Image 1 (spheres, rainbow over the protein chains, first blue to last red):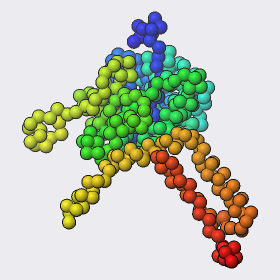
Image 2 (image 1 turned 135 degrees about the vertical axis):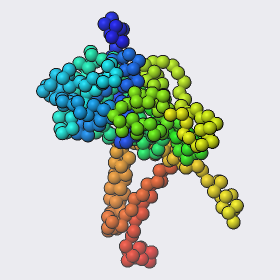
Image 3 (image 1 turned 120 degrees about the vertical axis):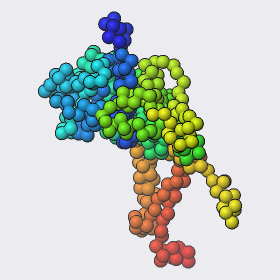
Image 4 (image 1 turned 45 degrees about the vertical axis):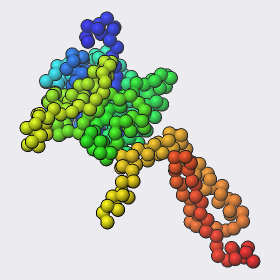
Length: 282
Length: 93
């Protein structure tokens, strides 16, 4: 909280949302976790590091309000305050978009370090949405992080790439270079408990055993996620009662340090829903 | 006959168990090998074995096949050298 920051109690936390593999839900998770933390009253900025393929602005519904971007700030063409876009629904949430026209080589390590330092002063949480891959762009996004959320689907290629990214987090970050451990959190997304029960999908236990990092949340496969991105809202803002939103809210509380057991949110289905085959309460 | 098929399919591992086992074997190798460690080893083995063979016989590089099968307990490196016909006959006689 702002009051804590004044007294130096709350240190800003830099979080990278990463995965290696594309399409597993990094941007969706960045938006949902950012909005969840912001709704608890903390000052949050979500930063899009996917230079050239920006999408966080679109998922957050801010695509028509982008004037300046991360590259402009890194290169000193714009002030940070000019590039930050404040969310219209949640005043403690801001977004720093990526550039759509430039390429990732326009990001310099020194420039990124300066911007991250400035963001740490302004916000309680700095959440970096990493590009896919393990190249320079992904490494710049993770370099300044205190903690990482590794977004993984219960699917072989995603698990393998997450393992690669975990290796990079332990070697190519500022913390690792200083000999410190970066906090790592596994966020399992697009999980289908029914298929896992039928042993058609890797289970939570399987993925945890293979990757051996602590679990921060299980987001079930859900129609609500696409609906939210269709209308340009984090799912935790547009349908806070939905199953994925509940999973993200819980994950956000765990990231903030609360100790709560991880469960797969399940639908409450009444007899009539069952009879008519409805998919749970809206 | 379908009950017989059932008898056999029931013994099969679930696809998620197959996925888990494949990942465990693969990642055990990738973690120990690090960045391209294993392919370097293969390249070197290939080169040195070829040198030894070339000392005795003239073999086409294309006639040497190197395969690797990673298992959970051990890995198998298979080197298949095709020796020219006339040469193998000469040695036998």
